[in-house]
Length: 139
Image (tube, rainbow, N blue to C red; front, side, top):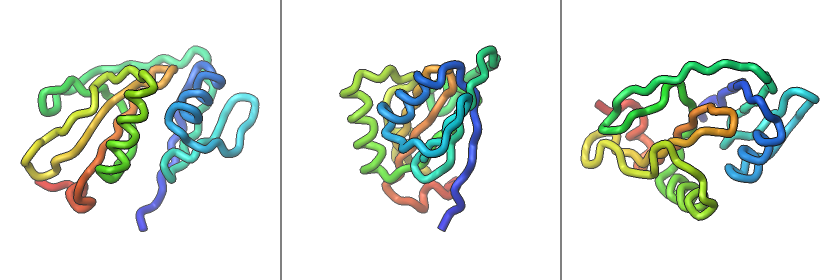
């Protein structure tokens, strides 16, 4: 079984983060305090810390025809989970930085992908693989 990761990220508005991660993405909230909240981020521990003046330096890197935001984080889902989440977010009117699409089509590592920003400007990527072993760094 893979080990879950722990990631702590800055946000400028805890209420907006709770709405985005809890309501929009469907993550269950765990512990919290006045300036931070834990979320079950698809089986991983994501902690959002309220940092009112956090500065982010974002850039982009070309990947298979897309300008991918860097830095970013996310999760790898099954193709069915990925499609269901993409459909739910599209129906909810979520703005995608990179809309759901298939990357590396027909090549090793073919995957569904989409990118979006949380309300604080943190970039997230969601990937979906039809074959779980394809994620393991196929060349």
